[in-house]
Length: 420
Image 1 (cartoon, helix red, strand yellow):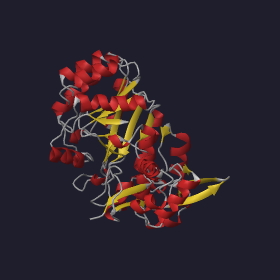
Image 2 (image 1 turned 30 degrees about the vertical axis):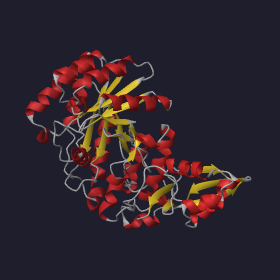
Image 3 (image 1 turned 135 degrees about the vertical axis):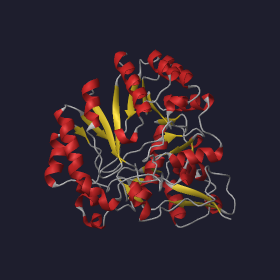
Image 4 (image 1 turned 135 degrees about the horizontal axis):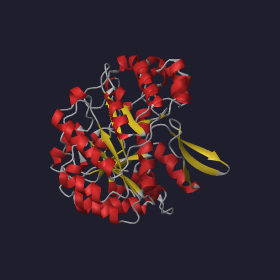
């Protein structure tokens, strides 16, 4: 679970995919999370049976109460691991907070190629990396590829100087028009250079982690064999998972590729399992329409859902995701004559071993929902376009319509719409 502490940042990276989030924060006048909201999120995480969390930004160490946040996490016995994503340009106060409350902390430092990082910033980053090393606080580096002529050679200086064991890397997210990234018609030209980078990581004994899925056809058969079997790499092949991120205004998104309108209030969910089910359902709408290349439609890997064709953001210039209606409701209201509940596409009813299930035909990642025989009657009427009020009037003795619809809403199977 990512917690966005602040939308302020000390950099202006060419590839930044968070710029739209920062713009949204400025529009609503909320650029950092309050301590009360932070405590609410931590309680939600613990209530869900989780013990790990991730701090992101912007630059999370720029939060005015960063020291307080680190102290609270350090003293909380139910939180066992804190992953901090930072650009390494950390002031003395925040650096002291890390050093003083480091028992549970893992750090990932994003580094830029020499031409992209001012010398003064690099000097500060190096000083902070020395402090982390001397304090024996585990850290790795993260590196973003946003241009065809990328040059990772500078990374090997860091690897040797700090005896690193792992590196995170990613292709730049193509989700913000102003940001720099390798366009889809050029992405396959990166395969050989990426393989060469991974071979050198392997020579150094470095584990590499890529954040988002890569299309199989980025690589030749020989390269694919090396990357998948021989390189000391953990490649997130196939369908992407969820990168759930809670923003300072306590709204949640699963992925930067989602429309800003699809932010949903944290209050909708009782625990993280519900949240994950909701967003896996929502992201299915994107994945069902995503084809990076024309040949994806006949590719066996794509058809078997082993490969989704890379980052969903690459489809932004090829299709417009079905946005939620402007009158979308975040929670189920008492039924009125103009309240509609729309099932999302690609859901079907299945009977198996005398039980009924609603399942997704578009993605294996969406967990089927078991329903009762009475709920099955409601679902059939719902799928035929019945109004909520009609559903209740036709089955008043059931007393289950509202709880059932609320349950379907929490797992992302339906949209609730107030007609205008």
